[in-house]
Image (tube, rainbow, N blue to C red):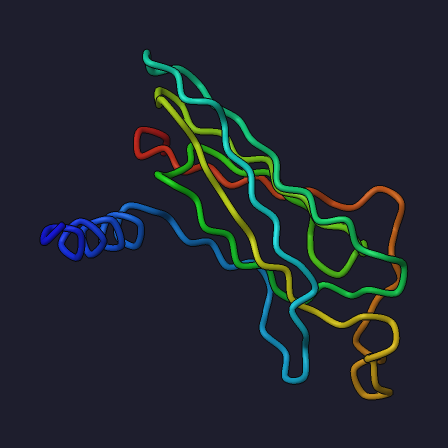
Length: 142
């Protein structure tokens, strides 16, 4: 019992320093937290490739301005759409040679009723096939 505080502190240190943070987009004054999504893969005793998808189901009229993604332990590559093109947001995360992959994301932006005239000028209408971005995190690639 007397070691529980030490275990909790160590778990917090591992969760903060053992994960990767990705910020996509820009924070905008007046934006709201539109949603939170989390997902993970099943633990495998032998390392293998793991892939998970985080999908935020928005509503027409939403405009996503910033996405905060926490990935544990890391990623090999990510694929996601360019912000502002669609009211939904998804990110595919892959990590090679691991036993588990876990991630969560916070989605920020404006809902249809909170968009003011000044902000509305900067918002583009959704397109059917958004442009995709792929980020690689492999130190062996040049």
